[in-house]
Image 1 (cartoon, rainbow, N blue to C red):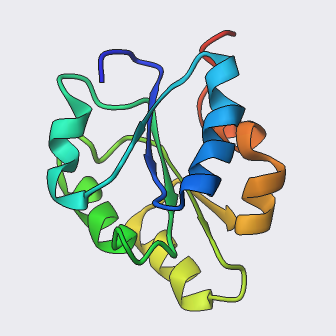
Image 2: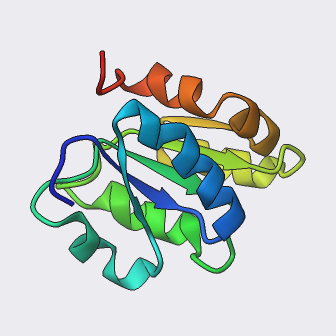
Length: 127
């Protein structure tokens, strides 16, 4: 990652990732897709991403455990995190709040308001 407009995306579902990419690329963001939580620090390079987008229900990536690592690391703990989860999973929502996630929304809201939700956390790179 070499740009301050990079977003680290923790979503293993390729179709959902494509939707996210299509929402953010035209706005000047570069996306780095998290493929493996073991090497996430190397994916950040010298500069942390502008924000992290995470699917709290992504079992392939164990996102909650990975976000614990993000929040425990002095270099990454202040990165804004936009997470989404199934709306009926109350324990996941509580966990996100306990982890210090900046904003968590339902998967449906995330799908409907993808760009707007991120811009509530950080200004657009084209602003």
